[in-house]
Amino acid sequence: MSLFSQAFAVARKDLAVELRTKESLNAAGSFAIVILVIFSFAFDSFSDEMKEYGGGLLWLVFAFAGALVFNRGFARELPNECLDTLLASPLSGAALVIGKAFANFTMLLVVELVSLVVFGIFYNVDWLGQAGWLGAVFALATWGVSILGAVFGALTVNLRLRELMLPVVIYPLMIPILIAAIELTNIVLTRRSISEDMQWVKVLVASDIGFTGLAWLLADTILVS
Image (cartoon, rainbow, N blue to C red; front, top):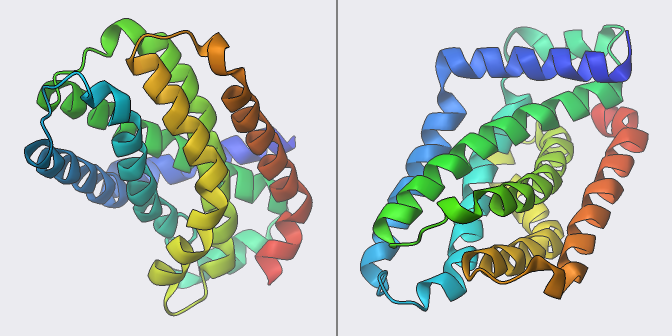
């Protein structure tokens, strides 16, 4: 069984559990919607300037909502010693971490889609015409934060204050991804060409490759730490 087949099996199992319980999706989705609605009253949401800082608002929401998803990734394996069983199985450490990242990625994309619908309604931003470019930016940036969430979710799973420690550790490492995602999202929302700022695309691609490679190489060390 290949690494990707194992990773897919882990992701499918996590998503099946999440569809049954909806713990992460309900928490992250509710948080994102509430924050977007509250900020719509704080700003002049119908001004043209909204498109200029809309990316910053969206990725601020996604970063905090993501922490709620990442915290549950490995924590759901703690009851009944499920995590120990997974580690003792023939499943490779890299497959486990990458599978968790795939599950994080899928759940966070769902939260982002719901958030975009709310954003379009409350901030009068027509993003449907740019859905393809937004999808590409969101996919690149979301994978980067998802693989980070899986790695540090594994590192903090046995800590008593993991809900506090995970965001403290992960947010500084997210900064390059978030800055690039914000810049590209603003470019798309203002209907400018991404080719004007290709360096931000390169930042996202480099971050995705780098963090995925490190997770792949260091997975076994991370899981036994």
